[in-house]
Image (cartoon, rainbow, N blue to C red; front, side, top):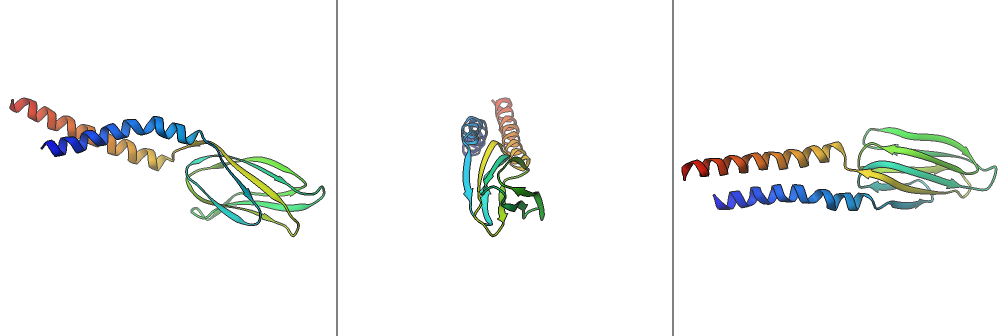
Amino acid sequence: MRLLKAVLLSIVIMTVLVFPIEKNALTQPISEVVLMGQGIIVPSSGMVMLSSSADEGTEYAIRVFDPESGRAVLERNVSGSFRGRVMLEHSGPYYFSVQTMTPVTMAVRVINRYPSVMVLNIRYGLGGVSALILAAILLVEGRKR
């Protein structure tokens, strides 16, 4: 019984302690430079700042594709330079591509990151159930004494 209480208590403590650690990790921006049709993995959902630059008058297409949903998050025809924002709904791979025959550099910077709803549901569910089971065990033990 002591082992079960120790395991449940450690799960509850880890659930509570992960929030400040996660907040610190999510405030660090992710930056990538995309040269040609490159995919990047974003570890959390969040807002992305896109910047692209090419010679003046160069026409190209920027596309951000989400393979999980099978749809494009952003498709934009651009001439010259571009700055914009894209909302990434979940963590996972997103493919950032520049379609052109001339050199274009696109910088991707993920800001305002936060865990996905699925991650939060798992964390709250596991921590909450562990806390309830631990409370029930302690209540039953208290009544026995």
